[in-house]
Length: 70
Image (cartoon, rainbow, N blue to C red; front, side, top):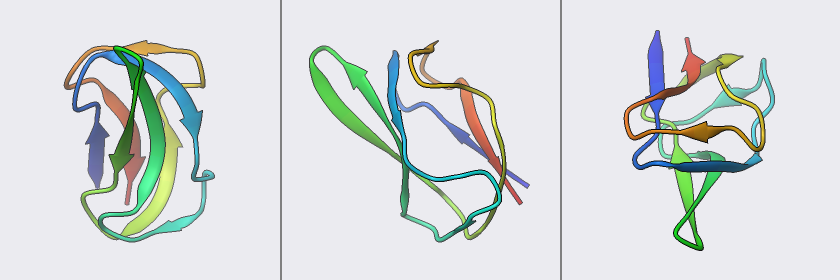
């Protein structure tokens, strides 16, 4: 199990991957908006996206878990 975490504080602007989707390491799964910049959130491992911990529009702090990949 791998927890994908926010790399900085910001709002979840867009969720790209769907729950149950097979994800490869380095693949963008969501986009954060912070300080008027779009920051891609990438998976750090291969696996299946089991759970989203956020929805679009949620605010996250650096280190918050965004998704679970198994």
